[in-house]
Length: 240
Picture 1 (cartoon, helix red, strand yellow):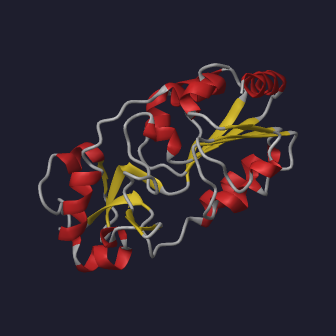
Picture 2 (cartoon, rainbow, N blue to C red; picture 1 turned 135 degrees about the vertical axis):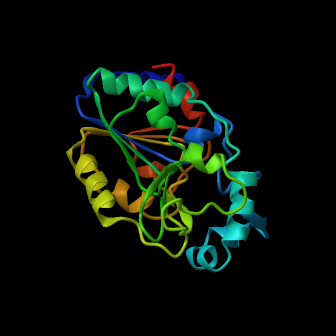
């Protein structure tokens, strides 16, 4: 383990264009549950993980009450702060080494830690909009409401700026992520099991020198990596 951390440290020191790709495991150390873990947001049954129906776009429009009931209890109540991983990545960006953070998370903790160039594949719950007139609302305005929030201008339904099941990912965001990964000389992948797209497909875009994977459990792409560390992402990054 220590030799792998030393290899990671040396690779970071010698790299000039690092990109970080992260998943839910980056935020679990801040107290935010992941999706597929034993205490995750997805329903666990017979070894399979099922997203709650409330996070489906069609059902959101048909029954926003169910969504906001689930959302307020399980997600809007998050009161998390950036952890060691977020802070180290922001530090690397300030040093000029890290060029972009690509995240599957929607919690905004990378920005809270100081990262500026954050590509959010699944959007952000920090931002919200009216689905009728597109007026924007900050998360603080949603937290100040009860029940289903409606637009102050047109009365339309307000939706978090996150990708629901039934919605397509933004192609421009995906293309931006691909551009950074293709230009990187080092790609650090952390806190993601790499079992679903676009996570898997994006890793294959990397043609640089060093691919490092940091995750508690094994991933299907460990065999492609130059450095593999099975440990907590915050613990590992704070040690380099």
